[in-house]
Amino acid sequence: MESGKKEFPLTTTSYAQLKGCLTQILANNISSRPGNSEESGSENLSPHGAFWKQLSYHDLVNGHVPNMGIPILTKSNSTTSNLILGLGRQAPF
Image: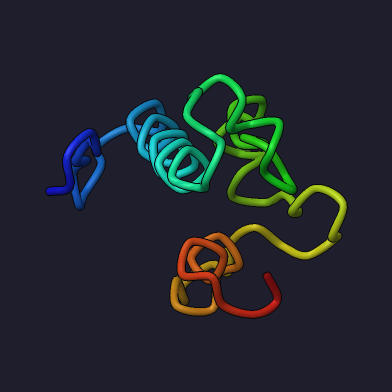
């Protein structure tokens, strides 16, 4: 593990835990950019912010990526889910 980076579980057992993992990933990626070191600013510097923080589980599973109008998840096929693609910096992100 890199110095200062928090590890998170590869599996989650609750939606609250998933939200925490996503927030940590966002903070790690934004704060690693030159000039950005504050976790609190990471949500404002990301194109979509931490949109999942305001969503219920139902809305995450059935909702759309803010300002893009594309589904967040693809049910029964995680490899094509936009959330997973975004985490991997793949198109359409």
